[in-house]
Length: 304
Image 1 (cartoon, one colour):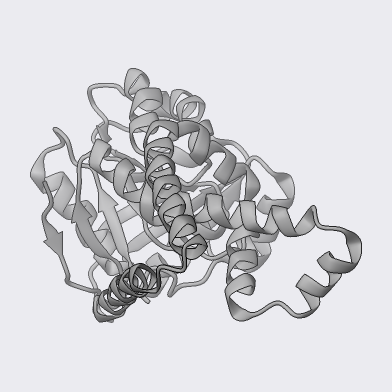
Image 2 (cartoon, one colour):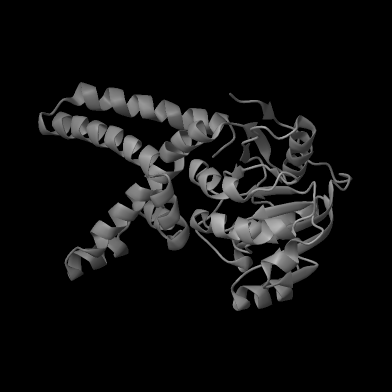
């Protein structure tokens, strides 16, 4: 199911792709451009965004050699094209740019769901394009080109879904990702969506719900919740500040896996409710001890 590469870039990393095109200059797109420049992985960076303000801001920031508003123009002669847009927009974008891509080029994405992206993009892929879905497990609550930074991917996993792409093409792409600072992991789409439903999508859903509950409180209580918020609640507000369009698309497009994990969470929450109601201290302590060990394993894995 998986195969991991844990090599990282060196300062004299050789150029891997002569020209890349990044469609979408938000946090991930801008950070990819900055990390590629830091590692000297590419000869030329084209960037593109449909938002004129994002295009203008990106030009001022200077993380790409050229920034345009036309996606078809951006991908011409690119060896690697990265779709860094919300998952709901992937299909339409791919349909637009694939005819403009040169034969032998690699097309990838950075979407947080994989089955829906495959469903939407597969029908428009031509035989002379290498379609290699992927997903960086990195991010912050910030968005837009000004949020990008060169070290976003350092030590973070970047999932690759190779399917039937030739291995030499996959290995070259993985070399690019490790050059960005990432640790690569190969995974199939179904398994990816189940893992991310629990580790990323469900926590965001819970955060949105908790913060929404606070918003709906009566005015004085809501003000005091904000005023006296402890670190746990502040962490939830940070997560809930993430890009609403991106997360709307994630939940709609990974609904099956999210609902499955949400059902399991609801059952576990009911178990906790009963334990609290009946004062079952041993059950609570056993659960809290087990979850504490999970936290330690995350730190030991360097993913804190």
